[in-house]
Structures are given as C-alpha cells and as structure tokens.
Amino acid sequence: MSVLLEARRLEKQYRLGGGRVLHAVSDVSLQVHRGEALALVGESGCGKSSLGRTLIGLTHPTSGEVLFDGQRISGLSDRALRPWRARMQMVFQDSSAAFNPRRTVGESLAEPLRIHGRKNIRARVDDLLDQVGLARSVADRYPHEFSGGQRQRLNIARALVLGPDLLVADEPVSALDVSVQAQIVNLFRDLRASLGVACVFISHDLSVVRQMADRIAVMYLGSIVEEGDGLEVLDRPAHPYTKALLDAVPRPDRPLPPPLKGDVPSPVNPPSGCRFHTRCPIAQPKCATDRPSLQPCGTGRRVACHYPLVA
Amino acid sequence: MGADSLLDIQNLKLDLPDGRRLLEGVSFQVQAGEALGVVGESGSGKSLTAMSVMGLLPGLRASGQIVFAGQDLVGLPDKSMRKLRGAGIAMIFQDPMTAFLPVRSIGAQIDEQIRLHQPLSRREARARTVQLLGRMGVPDPVMAAKRYPHQLSGGLRQRAMIAMALSCSPDLLIADEPTTALDVTVQAQILTLLREIRDEGAGVMLITHDMGVVAQACTHVAVMYSGLVVERGPVRDVLDRPLHPYTQALLAAIPPLEGPRPERLPTIPGQPPTPENRPSGCVFAPRCSFVRPDCAVRPALIETEEGRRVACVLYAA
Ligand SMILES: Nc1ncnc2c1ncn2[C@@H]1O[C@H](COP(=O)(O)OP(=O)(O)OP(=O)(O)O)[C@@H](O)[C@H]1O
Ligand SMILES: Nc1ncnc2c1ncn2[C@@H]1O[C@H](COP(=O)(O)OP(=O)(O)O)[C@@H](O)[C@H]1O
Ligand code: SF4
Ligand code: SF4
Ligand SMILES: [Mg+2]
Ligand SMILES: [Mg+2]
Image (cartoon, rainbow over all chains, first blue to last red; front, side, top):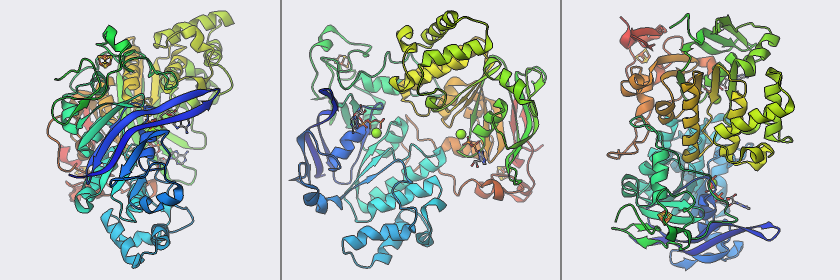
C-alpha cells in the first residue's frame, strides 16, 4: 500500500503566557496508507486532537513536517492549502455544530460543491445521502429534525462531499448510544470498502477502536508510545501504558486490577526520561533518566520502552 | 424483596402538564449493600427516575410509589424531601461542575454540606472534609480542599463530588453517569470507590450506558426502554443470559475487546419512540425481530425465575 500521509518529527506547542510552553505533540512520526484506518488512542489531554488537527493542516505544527501524497503541506498558507483541503476532511464529535440551523441539510451539503464549481450537484447530494444510509428526501429537512445518529451520518456526508482521500474523525461515536454507535461503526467500514477513503480515528474507547482500525497508535503526553496492527497491539500489548489502559476497561469476566497510580503529569512540565515512568508499574532506575525512542518490535510494530512486555 | 428494600419503586409514572407521559411505570428495588445498574439508551428515562427519587422535578406529576426506608416519597412536602437529600439520599452527576459553585473552594462547599446536617464547628467539619477527600484517594487532601473546582482535574473533581455526596453517610447513593466523561484509568478508580461504599452497607443506584461498568460495579441491573423497565435481575444472569430482545440486541451491539473481530456489528433497526408516539403494546415492538400478534398488548414485567423479571410475551406463562 502506498503512503498517503506522512508526519515527520511533528511538534505542536501552545504558548501559555508567563513563558510557559505546553507540549501537546512531541516528536511524532507516522504514516497513513491509502485506504487504511489508523486509530489514535490515549487519555484525555495526551494530544490526540492536536495531532489530528495538525495532520490535516487545521493548525500549523511548531516544527516538523506533514507530507500529503508526497508533497509538503505543513507551513503552507491558508490559500495555498485550499486545493488540498478538499482531499482531507474532519468529522467531529459534536455533530450539531457542522450544519447551519437555518438551512436545509441539502443546501448545506450542496454549498461546498458550488464553491468548488462542481456540476450535477443534486445528483451528488443524492449519492451522498445513499452512501451514509439516509433517505434522499431528508435533503429538504433542517438539522434540528434529526436524531444524534442521523446527525452523525449527515456529518459524515458533509465530510465526504468533495470526495476526500482522508477523513480525520475525532471521537465520531463517543456521544452516541451503543446501538447507534454500532450503526456508525459499520457505516465507516462500508465507506472505506466502497470509497477506499483512509481514516484517522481518534477515540478513547478501545473496543470501538479495535473494531474500526487496522492500525493503532497509543499516545501518552504528546508522544506515540506504541504503534502497530490493531488486533496485535490490543491482544498482546508491548508497552506498559497500553496494558494499563486495557486493564482499566471494565469487563464482565474479571475484577478490576489495581488502578494506575496518580494522574497524567502536566504537559507543561513533562517528566524526565520515559514520560510514563512516574506511573509505570515496572519502571527501573534507567527509565527516569533515559528517554526510550520508538523502536521496531516484532513485525510492523514500534514501541518506546526500555523493557517491552513482548519481544 | 419488597418490604425490607432500602428503595422500592413501584409503577412510577411521570407526566408533563400537557399530559405527555415520560415514565410509563418504572418498578425496581435497591437493597442496602447492593448496587443496581440502570441501563438503556438516552431518553429512556434513567435520569428522570433518579430525579424523581431525589424529588427534584418540579412541574412534573408523579404517581405510583417511591418507598425509601419505609417512607413514600411521592407527594412528600419539599421540606421533608430537603432533609432526606444529603442525609438519607445523595446524588452525584456526570458533570461535577454542576455540583460545585465555581467561586468557592471545594473544601468550603463540603464543610457547609456537612454542617447543614450535623452540629459541627467549622474546624471539625474541615477535619471531616479532609478525611473524606483522603479516603477518596485525593492526594494531599489538605491542599486539595483549598482549591477551586476549575483547578482540579476531571478525576479529582469527580472524587471531590463523591466526597461531598458521602459527607453525611447517606444510606442510598444515586450516581448518574458518574464516569461517562472520564478516562478508563480514572473510571477504574471511581468504580473501585463505589464498590467500597457498597461494601460498607450503602445502597447504590448507578445509571450508565456502559455494560462493562455495570458488570464491574453492580450486583443487579434494570434495563429501561422508552420509560419502562423491560428486564431486571442479578447482573451475571442478565449479562450472561439476557431474556428481553432489547437487552439481547443492546449487548450484541457492543464491539468485543477480545476474540474474533466481527465483520459487522449487529444493530437495532429504527429508533426508540418519542413519548407521544409510544406504541400502546410492547414499546419495543416496532424494532423487535421476534414481534408477533400478541405483542399488541403491553406485556407486564413478570417474574420468570427467582429474582428475574422480563416484560415480553415470549416469556409469558
Ligand atoms: N489551543 C490550545 N491552547 C493551549 N493548550 C491547548 C490548546 N489545545 C489543546 N491544548 C492542550 O494540549 C494538550 C493536548 O490537547 P488535545 O486536545 O490534543 O488532547 P486530546 O488527546 O484530544 O484530549 P481529549 O481526549 O480530552 O480530547 C492538552 O493538555 C490541552 O489542554
Ligand atoms: N423536564 C423535562 N421536561 C420534559 N421532558 C423531559 C424532561 N426531562 C426529560 N424529558 C424527556 O423525558 C425522556 C427521558 O429523559 P431522561 O430521563 O433524561 O433520559 P435518560 O437519562 O435515560 O437519557 C426524554 O424523552 C426526555 O426528552
Ligand atoms: S521505559 Fe521504563 S518507565 Fe517507561 S514504560 Fe518502559 S518500563 Fe515503564
Ligand atoms: S413483547 Fe413482542 S415485540 Fe416486545 S420484545 Fe417481546 S417479542 Fe418483541
Ligand atoms: Mg480531543
Ligand atoms: Mg440521563
């Protein structure tokens, strides 16, 4: 599979005033292949959304670069980015914000097509509604008339309007009920199969991620600590943090193991050495001083740990 | 069950002034030392049931019975209800910011709550606050008590709210989606806490949409759909062997965290009915794959075996 999107040594810092700097994304390198689904997981504040937004040029990286289809898109002006925008779209969690409440959803879906000078607009809108599993007649209705699940379908339709190669979906199902969530999870799978669109899913729900993604990147305090085939990473985690996340998921068949100690440290003053060492159950003295880099581990997997759980 | 339950809700109905019926007859019990999980999709009436127990629904008409420690709360005067809240029954919410005022330290707010129900000096109340925060696993509780709500992380804020809810040792703790906004790591800490509270003898009513949370933190479960309880029983029984077609479909829709990955997840066609077009027969009938003619009459929640009940014609005697 060929590489669609590549991030090289991305850094995203936010200046907080008083000279303080928050390291939201630090030294992230990754690739997304054509048609592939990559999931970003990790605790709140670990930089998933910041990374997702930087990948598709919604924010500028502090340093590092992003290549789309082999061409550098980071650092481009908004104007220069415009032709690329059609090829990368974002799907947000809050599905009500994306549509103008005073317009029919058909009008909202047609607008980007008109701006980009596309033809056969009505037919394209019909196609889109078919693709996301809504009746064509809904084009004449207003956003407030839809349920949460239908709004998320519309939201996905909006992201697909211009025929993107890549979707970045930030918590696309976390606000939905389990039964509706299952429908949207299936929809993403159908769309990937029929349109070949690549997806970066951001989610904190590991069972959803396991269902949706080919590959998983686990983030902690702005960095990827483990990355690899989805089933492999979740079935046999190599990084102690991945294992801790999995252990914390409540399941019917076993009592909860002792929770991970402490809170996530501040991304303004991240710990020295391995950033996970303040909470890691198997930390050694070396972990407090030497920062482990992301190294190959087994087939197609990368892990940043001095003492990985699988070889 | 019944007479000696800590909380016994029988056929609770809730109506809007315009006549729309939001709860159609909710029945379940919570025993001391047990935790009842209340599950169901959004809009099924979970929060309304909780708020009814708290007596926090002005403007809605309740009928049926909510018996708490031998006293029927339906129609209880505000003053008596206020006494019960905090002392007998306490509630925690998904968003701890709703429980705290933003402009005062969390310690001051917990102190005040304690002194409302117990004749303690400021200093004594603070000592108890600090002790409670410590028990909730809040690091450096003396300092934490001095902080304002926005200065604490989500997990710490949630623990501070639980500390406040427990400050008067309530017999019943109602928790409405207490971990929905939290990371799994923090959620695990809160669930462990809830378990301790239960082990100490309090009853817990835990509203959630996460079956894993139910499995982990509850002894019993009630499944709600469209303003009704459609199934209830001991957690293991219901999760291992769900009887109601809705419970079965709900469990099937959860993607597995281990084992083979299904090509597609089973889904439930359609949507739940709104209160105004709730079917007169079985409320799940329009989406049920087992529907048959006798489903046109609303099935009662009948006992199928010791401690288990289901409202579905498939299990009628
Ligand atoms: N515009 C901003 N200015 C300053 N700090 C920010 C900004 N956006 C995000 N941050 C901080 O950067 C870090 C990473 O944030 P980000 O939103 O990427 O996390 P996330 O992994 O998406 O979290 P969540 O799961 O809660 O959505 C956090 O500490 C956050 O508070
Ligand atoms: N104060 C209210 N006035 C009118 N309708 C309400 C009110 N509160 C809730 N509802 C409606 O009652 C139903 C059940 O709501 P709720 O108990 O909040 O559901 P849940 O907690 O299960 O998601 C929903 O249809 C909701 O829109
Ligand atoms: S490097 Fe050390 S502290 Fe970091 S995850 Fe590995 S064992 Fe734990
Ligand atoms: S009563 Fe009928 S419609 Fe309702 S759940 Fe049972 S079989 Fe399905
Ligand atoms: Mg985010
Ligand atoms: Mg609710």
